[in-house]
Length: 384
Image 1 (cartoon, one colour):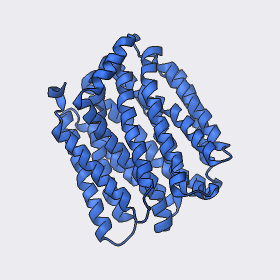
Image 2 (tube, helix red, strand yellow; image 1 turned 120 degrees about the vertical axis):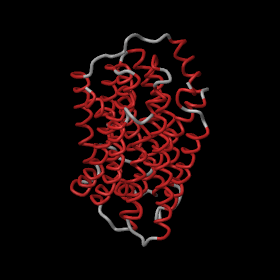
Image 3 (cartoon, one colour; image 1 turned 90 degrees about the vertical axis):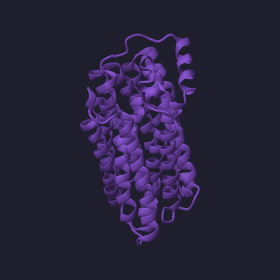
Image 4 (tube, rainbow, N blue to C red; image 1 turned 45 degrees about the horizontal axis):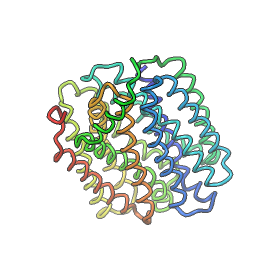
């Protein structure tokens, strides 16, 4: 069940990373500037965040399975809309519908984990979910690049439509209902306001949002750099991106192996420190080394390892602040993190792509903010 939950959790990122290699082709096909084509990413992220906000409370109220199946069906219908989109606005709308559906996979899979495992095992189970997601993410850019080159950018949405329908069946057939009882409506709002007022919850939101934003800005910016500046193919972009995902996978793997003897808060701080250290190394290498993909991708792979250590700790700690309303907590943390990510993608796209300095400066700033939150706001048991 955990492996299947990992696949459902990966639906949103898989859809995003399959599509990323097609961005330059979409820009050329519709004859629009980069920042306009980037709306297919930023609007999708915003829709993903909105879906996250509502799918958790819905799963608390109506159950995990029905919300999950409806979400995967919405994902499939949105992918079909993208496949037949006659113009960029239709493609943007299709991407919004698609990611609205995939948001349920992220939220509900985490809620099922909270329902099914004791608190001391939650962060390792979430790391396992994330490892499955990272495997999909690592393969998706390469597969997307192959599809774009061989069959055109619309072929990506043929794959995603089929994947959505398959996930509907898998959720119906293999995911049990784990919600014990629906929460009282008044307590839901009370819990939401209580969480939003807690500095530690806001710190977790910012820390996780910085991690996700750094990765999303990176993968949405580098296709232009790789193809236009370094003259690399979409397949090569996929291979390089898979190496970065490999760093994240190793970080998650270390969580599953070392979590029983390495405290959650210490592992989170270590991961955020690694993220900042290699963000600074990225800035230095791009500034001093000859132009090319290696000064960008090598430090990003090690930066992603730090993210893989930190993010499962951030999310599991945030969710266990209110285990009785796991869906709601998952929605709030996911919504905030993805809104930060969506705004960051659109903000960075307003600057010239060039050698990637806007992306790198953003990476350093976001990593600094995450470290400051971890050190200035009390975490752990003292914050609960």
